Image (cartoon, rainbow, N blue to C red; front, side, top):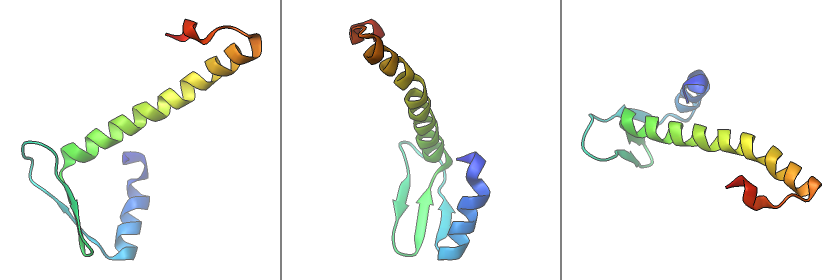
Length: 79
């Protein structure tokens, strides 16, 4: 979440976890234990982009669903 990088960095400093950026490798790297969090940038980019896309879908589709419900329009037109 690049737009919240400062906030997340402050949380990491407050709770004292060591954050390690793992070298790029095949697959995804995301591990944690009581003292450290390890991830690679490819993994974080993947989760950020999918989360952003999901949030945009949540913003876009509810107005169409409300409109269809209010007007009695069948929902199969949304396909």
